[in-house]
Image 1 (cartoon, rainbow, N blue to C red):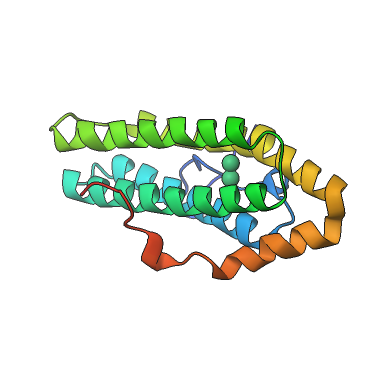
Image 2: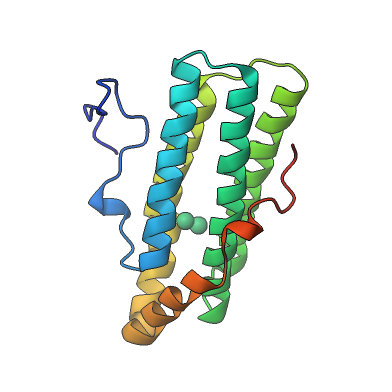
Length: 170
Ligand SMILES: [Fe+2]
Ligand SMILES: [Fe+2]
């Protein structure tokens, strides 16, 4: 579990603190995971400040887009190395994305969404990284450490910010 006492610079509790336990050792994936945690913090800050719906909508949209990008990177990596639990992992990614879309739809329909959304996302990513992501990392290491990790690094250049708006509702 993340350290519940971790404080942000502004003095409030951090909802998605980074920890070494989430480090995969694969540069691009660690970077994406860290950025995802930061975007969850941004979303949490929007709720905390009682930000306007428009600001929350944008924070959620950016988080959704970045999540798509991250899942695509990770799925390409798993496929490339022939990871046996690929389908189960993709299914879990799809479930999360469906949930994010549901939050976005609720917001568009005028429903108030709350800090619980940021808390849900933080909890989901903490558990998913520790359980599912670390499993393909173990597989990669068992296969061919240097080669698999190098391939992970190679994906760094495959996806970029231009991919962000794929299939994400306004
Ligand atoms: Fe991940
Ligand atoms: Fe994953």
